[in-house]
Amino acid sequence: MMRIKYIVGIAFCTLLLGCDEAALMKKWTPPEAEADARNYVELLRQGKFERIEHDLDASVTDSNIQDTFAKMAAIFPTGDPESVKVVGAHTFHGQGNSITDITLEYEFPGKWVLATVGTQSKGNVSTITGFHVNPMADSLENLNKFSLRGKGASQYLILTCAVCALLFSLYALVLCLRTKTVKTKWLWVLFILVGLVRLAVNWTTGEFTFTLFAFQIPCVAAIHPLYGPWTVALYLPLGAVLFLHHRWKMKVNGELVEPPSHI
Image 1 (spheres, rainbow, N blue to C red):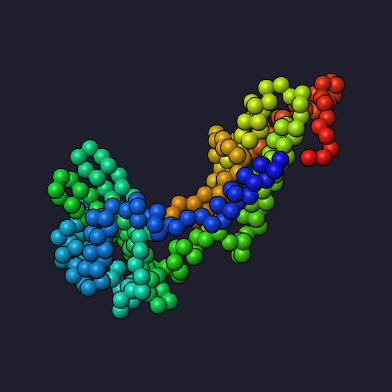
Image 2: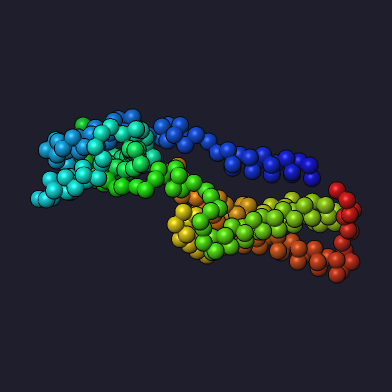
């Protein structure tokens, strides 16, 4: 029992402390793609639209591209940014080509801007396949951080149910370990931790998703991509329910040896 408490405590502390998102993002970001993205955004801010247009892929060329660039450049405040960091990096490799999307977060005094630049490489030729600029009310890190403030009743309900499901599974697990007359105990231990059917909520937006054919060990999950929103997922603790039902049947049939009342 003490070992279980230590393991739960370590897992909880790890969840709270997390890790350095910037350091992880740097490891996953191709340096050349990041340099290209930063260069194109600087060209946009300086109004050098012709140099960007020269590198546009044929699939995204437009007769009004200069007006589009001007509107995108107007989103950036004047002056140098206080910081620039990569908050998104995705690379897709195909046959003979690769596509990379880099999202940069620019921080200005009291304002943040996200710029996403998509590039495609075919052999020695690199072209721009996408360019998007969006203003933000705050940094992605602050917008998507896990907080209990300002959430809806449905979000609190999912979180409460997830915690209760986890505690219920742990209760069934401890009871299984302490019950001596359970046959194939190791199989029950594994099955108790299984959760089926997924109900999840995006903790930032409050959007719900439901997946009928899904399983998870343990029966809850709280995950988020780098700089992305948290997703809290609840799974039906079917294994724990079936074990308690099996234990009740053993008690009715007189096959159960009750564990001691103290730990």
